[in-house]
Length: 290
Ligand code: UTP
Image 1 (cartoon, protein in one colour):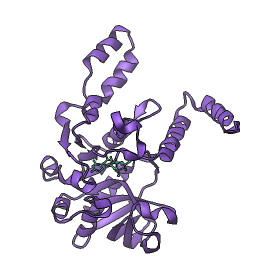
Image 2: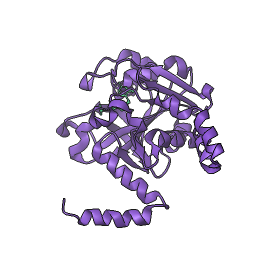
Image 3: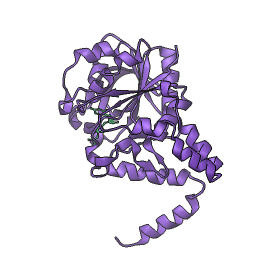
Image 4: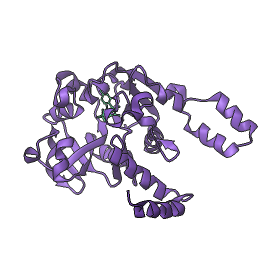
């Protein structure tokens, strides 16, 4: 069975990006003219996903607003004969039956967010995608699904980070590595630099076997006093096969100021309509003495 469902958690408070995230949630921050959510949906759709489950808080209705039909906007674009834009807006729309919102009243952690989707995920294995981890280049979810299709096991997207950064991530303790794929023995959430078992860090892409819910039920609060998804995956690795895959794209942490601006620059460089003038302007800005 291939992966058809993605869980996209958006219930966090985005405290690193305040005040911007006081009124608008993090996945709606735009890179050029598209919000992070748009990139997430595009990546999932082109990896073959057809069903979208959002874990959201009571204030955040943005995913359903962004992905459902906007009749007033569509008729305005039709009247103005902006047919290309109309098509683009329509292409974003998902069928109502393919979107589900699951509520997490308090941000108790990513593990808790995923646990809440059990009823809606049903019996299938599924993907998890964090929209603030933007991955440009090769479609990361597609890469992980192709490993899942071969191994029929949990597959986690990882990347190599600087030694001094390991304390910000879930870090992989692996055994047998085969190219980009490793078999995981354990995941350690935010280890001290001296205790880190490797430099392979978990970022926001996972393919999970349905039995992860069994392990999510068993774990209690971990690092940062939150229910950590990595703790459930680590526990499952005792009995189940868990693989990590070093994806080939470039990841930007859009939940941080520096990561977000780097992603913004990369998107500008990828956009043919502005690349040339953008480079000139950037050179001017860099020459100024701030
Ligand atoms: P982060 O760890 O970046 O947390 O969540 P955050 O609250 O969004 O941001 P900061 O750290 O306070 O700045 C990673 C992803 O997991 C979701 C977030 O919405 C984000 O997409 N998340 C996190 C939840 O849905 N629920 C939670 O309890 C925690």
